[in-house]
Structure formats: C-alpha cells, structure tokens
Amino acid sequence: MKASLVLTALLAAPSVVFGAQRDRFESRRMQAEIRREVQESLRDARRMRWEAGRTIRRDALRARLEARQAAREAVREARRAAREARRFWRD
Image 1 (tube, rainbow, N blue to C red):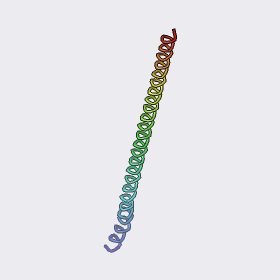
Image 2 (cartoon, rainbow, N blue to C red):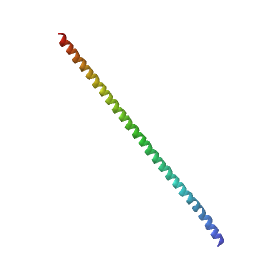
Image 3 (cartoon, rainbow, N blue to C red):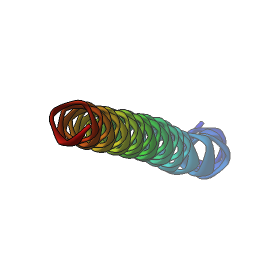
Image 4 (tube, rainbow, N blue to C red):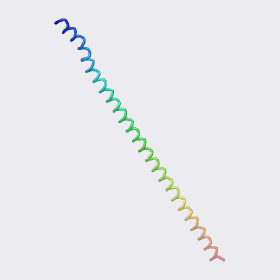
C-alpha cells in the first residue's frame, strides 16, 4: 500500500509540477503576443501620424507656392497696367 502510494505520488508529481510550468509558459507566451500586438499598433500609429504630418506639410507647401504664384501674377498685372498708363499719358 505504501509503495503504491509512493509510486502514485512519484508519477503524479511531474504532471503537477510541469502543469504549473505549462501555465507559466502559456502566460508568458500570451504576454509576448500581447506585447507584439501593442508594439505593432504603436508602430502603425506612429506611421499614420508621420504620414498625416507629411500630407499636411505637402499641402501647406502647395498652398504657399500657389499664393506666391498668385502674388507674382498680381505684381506682373500691376506693372503691365502701370506701363500701359505711362504709355497712354506719354502719347
């Protein structure tokens, strides 16, 4: 009886010990998976923020160039009108 109890304990002990380790391994694997998902989502958020900033900068540059072109065109038109007025008053 005592031998069978010892034998049962010896056979059951590894499954109890390794079962606890299996739970620990599973929890670590889940933590690693969660960590990877969080890192990936943060990486995606940074990339989206960078792309949004790039789009904003590109649109601002385009708006500045258009404003500069419009100002140059207005100056050209004013000079042309002044030239015409001088010609008109000279003649």
